[in-house]
Length: 328
Figure 1 (cartoon, rainbow, N blue to C red):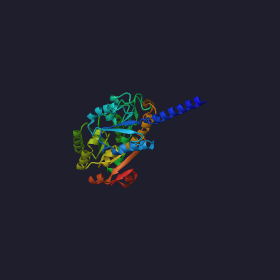
Figure 2: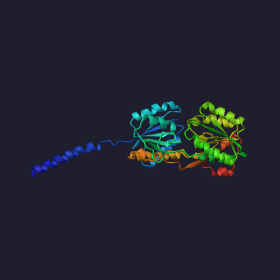
Figure 3: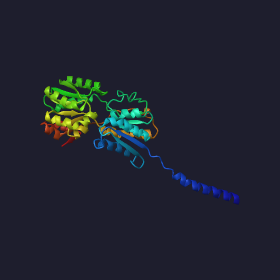
Figure 4: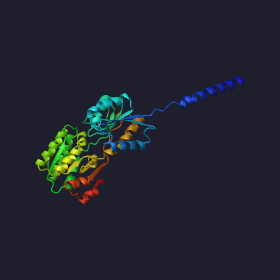
């Protein structure tokens, strides 16, 4: 009996000694790589939307999740090195902001899951096999809605009296270019508007395009896409719009918040918030190949009255009433 008591006592002591060691084992905190072509200040709204999405799912940055931010500051040639750095850090998932950072991330790893916060054409860009079955290690959200270009032209007709000629600034190198141009041509034909297509591939092309539009007596400018080039040249575009007194329709609200006239398109901040859901599912074990690429569900119409005043344009009250946001 005494031997049994001693044996049980020793077992209890050994168990007690092992317990603290087990309790002290740190819980692995997931790390997210966050790769952006622009700067932290220029993309702060989108980044906050992503953080909000994480918080809604129970993640608190610095407590149960860590985000490794890498910004190229507009120097896209830095993205491959930044992507490689995130791979060396062995992050659990990489979130990319648009096609420019997604491509170097794809080239840097075929193992670490990659979530596209948005992409204009994931299939056309070669990132996924299909929207329903992405395959590989990439999934996320798409902004591909070429029919929206027709809606933008319709809105231009409502604010520009006797609209007859529109200069469409686009980039022939983007994956969705042909689809967007096709939809725009259809809308222009239906509205009796003549399109003047101008290819904008570099910063110097922006001024050349405005000069050509003015020479051809365009009544307005419609930007077919809002990639890194447009973002980097937003101030110059605004200046040239005022100089030539030309209304400009943008694809995204960010350009209008930076003194552009108006935009109609996908709510990119909503896509960033939704990107957090992909991160959550991947961290819980779902493979990117099994997560279909989702389409946008939220759209926004934004008007900047200050920009309208600068070019002497009056926005009709019925158009203002339909805007999701009016900047005064």
